Image (tube, rainbow, N blue to C red; front, side, top):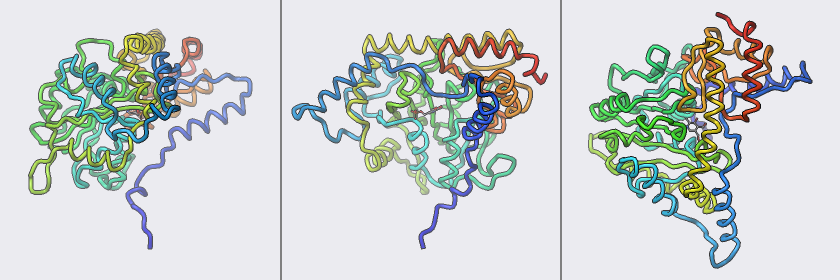
Length: 412
Ligand code: PLP
């Protein structure tokens, strides 16, 4: 008899985006004339940088000729891209990362979800709350979570991210084996300082733990003093794996290209305590289950590092930053407490009321869609996330509507 992996039965259904979609269609039916502005989505809205499009086209033309056609590429990615990443994203910032330590993939969602697969089933896991849901769900699938009570699983160490700790989790009081960190953060938009990150690296070294560091929103960091990579911290090579993506940097959400950095010094242990190189294990896993990102997509990603590509990427990020600044200004004017929007496209707003009730009021009174914070974890129950991924016109219109509907929105 064929049997299922029963851990999948423990997963909570992800009602977040389907609930939002249902509420929008109900509202639209009742108000057919209303023009809804969606600030809930975490997807890029600007076209690919022209330098990437040109490189993409050139590579497709190469595929059209026998002489330049390429079949299967290296599973780890082409050297032309890995070399550029190693130099521009790491070495130029003083982070000692080589091209061999970079694995090109089709997305950080898959990488952050898959990496736990090479680790033992009975390790302890620490996760921020609120959090990008992929980290939790993939650990539940792997059987690392116990029963669920009041929205939280037994055996998972939840690290509350609240206004009190500046949305940067505190070190766990006891040892944990696997730690997920994400900065700039989705959903809060919060950022971590080098000093705070160094504490996590020290903690991981002391406890022989591993940090999975998700830096998918690194391009939004606007302060040179903040760490763009965990490898800017001394000792991180021994205890951290980093995930990066071209999705939010260069609008590759539909084109798909990302990478994972696994330093050769990064170790994990077997049941006898003997150490093993995670790079070798991940290489084995990656080359067995993944067959590389398409050649044209890797050429398009490479163009991000050309001088035109850099300028174009900067212009796109600045465009979203301007939106984020407009949202922050509106929240300041209205007296809301919030975090994010400076080093991130997300603004995490304290509604001081139930996040779904606020969602309903915002849709009903202003025709604006947000993401209710509860969808990212119990600590998000009074927060909403607004996204800067939109046109200037829509952001402006949404902020004016929120300002007008202000009295009816606030529960405080
Ligand atoms: N990590 C975080 C924190 C994200 O918010 C997202 C997407 O929203 C991803 C990773 C996924 O990125 P990708 O498009 O590379 O799969």
